[in-house]
Length: 343
Ligand code: SAM
Ligand code: DTB
Ligand code: SF4
Image (cartoon, rainbow, N blue to C red; front, side, top):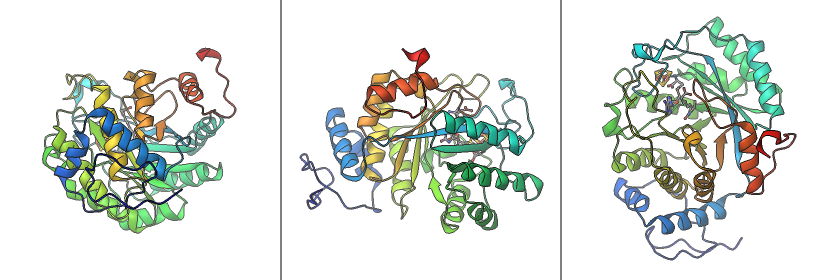
């Protein structure tokens, strides 16, 4: 691809199509907010150009999720049905799943066409001992199946990160969730700084960083831009950036939040793509509420990963057949999957 020099300003109206802007780590919140607030078609066009200059637009990652330890979490994240603080969710506390069960699920996800298997545990932080050893075995098992492995277990020590890296972990998910100013409205039991320390431990161990957030919790656009600023000013950028729309679960403090406007998700995906040109921008929770046209607009704007499989952690995700049909309709086939229900 022809390399054309970067524009003088990130707000220049007309970028040449083959432009490859420099990867920056010095964004201001105001700059990111100005990008976010561009007229929608300009924003999507700019994001699509940058996406195509840095990534293969036909490469949309499919990541399957499994809750390996559900419920009873001591943290008080206002959005989360797994927090023990939110008594009205009716969520049972379960033990860590056996390794063999997890690996059976991973094999089924691979069979259905997933590239990555992500395992989530409702912990503040993992305890060293048999449970952590079991998670290491899960990671080794998933890698042994030839899939990428990701876990999200809460805060990690440097030693735990090192052991996960040794087991072959591809990526660790630990979200900032929102911007630093709004964060305290959502979580009181763990600080923003705690989260940044875990991200540092993950990076230091050589594991890929998967870090993003949630829209629709009552935050302003400035908070969304502020979260993207923290992420984009990390060097290197996170390898994956999940953009979740709040799934407003009954019994959580955020149960009455109105649904996110799908175009807000398009804007977040596009802005994340522009400020982190090579990251995997994952259109994550809340995708079930989107029409296929809204999802396609997110892909055009640079989203290049989805959660794939009929469950997220505790809530429903899009059906596998309809995802396979959606991907087929934009020209991507999922190997080995028949589309009986989607025809
Ligand atoms: N306990 C670990 C932690 O929080 O680090 C891992 C699991 S936690 C469920 C992973 C992420 O899922 C959260 O950081 C949040 O961004 C996202 N999440 C949880 N509940 C959600 C909801 N109701 N809607 C959207 N995203 C949600
Ligand atoms: C992420 O950013 N989103 C996923 C994953 N990382 C672990 C979790 C979404 C959870 C949605 C609510 C639920 O199913 O419990
Ligand atoms: Fe616990 Fe994670 Fe849910 Fe927060 S998001 S309550 S840390 S499971």
